Image 1 (cartoon, rainbow, N blue to C red):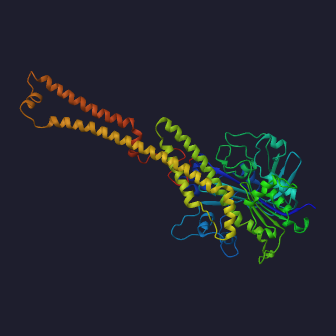
Image 2: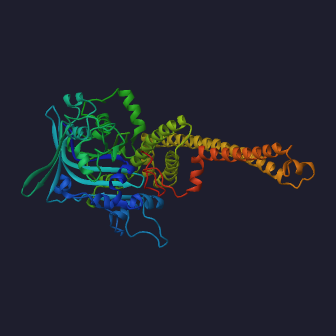
Image 3: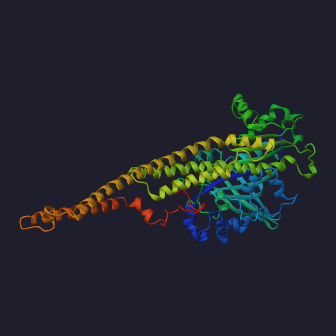
Length: 560
């Protein structure tokens, strides 16, 4: 008897980082000095319809803010499980806030509405003649003020053999091959496509194959299914880049049909084997994909078993987040007629927790890259013995943005209920968020220390120059003052009323004083000219910053 997946619901999550300096260079007219977050709607809506098959055949991204907050609304049911400060920060709401000019949340949520009459399908096939078709039921996009974005493609299928359901999760998550061998061996799709089914027939919207894949500078050849959905940003010009590898994150729900398996299957090791195959996003098999003892020890850390007696398992890895249950049923007082509780939680609060945790991971990976790039710039500057103003601004902005991430975005706890908190702790653990955050914080602190040492050395040099110039000018003042004193008798006769015998002394004194004054003024001018960069900012405090750097939070970017 072969197990059947009664309901497969998977979100393929693609985190990416927007190069805001590149976007501002190419689309600066959209912002006109506004904050980054305030121009996102116009940036997305500015794209012409005819340039994108997604826009022409499916529709545009539309703002999907929460606007209704009554007891039966999705907003109420999604937000109520989180702490109040999480509701303020991680929910795109409209019409909510106090009258004291409270700032909106620094993120925007968008969706492409999908019509029941015009169904969208996602098809994948490989070189081993395996293929699958899934209905796309959700297209969602999150854009954050720090430049991180999250694209979610939600697909659903029903009554699938286990091997096909696992194949879908394994293959559809690939957005580019890591080598030509993957294509030849059928380990990545040879072709993926979007098509729309209308009452008048099926129309293919776009198709992607990977046969001509090649690196674009340092960027991989991301599938044009992804680039077409992100039509408002130009991947070819480097306006954004993926922050992970060739796979999207698999956030998946699988309900096993209890009639397709033996009685008490959910209490057997075979069920654990099946769950391990889903958790580690592998093809179907009779045993664990990896060494039995190794896999069992790993699953002890990565599988949440509070509801295992009912057949419900939750698992977390750095590339997957899987919920598996055993059929559908009344969950204690939660009636099935109100919607199956486990799937409802999967599609609401746990989905939001997965987005937040992935946002943390993507942000920290982006910080790691930006720290490296800024450090490289500072390294070149240190070789020249002087830091440029632009790189100093970039370093300061990097430090400021990390401060905002630590103090505004990041929380170790999102909700105070045990189950939600335990889920998030496990998810944060597999993403290694705490250690990544500590490491990035140490690196930024080192950058800050290097700048502090640089400023200290420059200030010491400036003080030494000031002392030297003061000494020279002071000596000149003493000399000129000496001759300005009212001495008489021989001094006056020699220097101010010389005779023919002392005339040469008179002129020698004048020449000596003039030479000393010229020397003092000349060395002062030389020191100011030679170190003009140290004084320029003082004399011109309103000077322009380096390209891509702005004093407005959320406008510039340290990636350049």
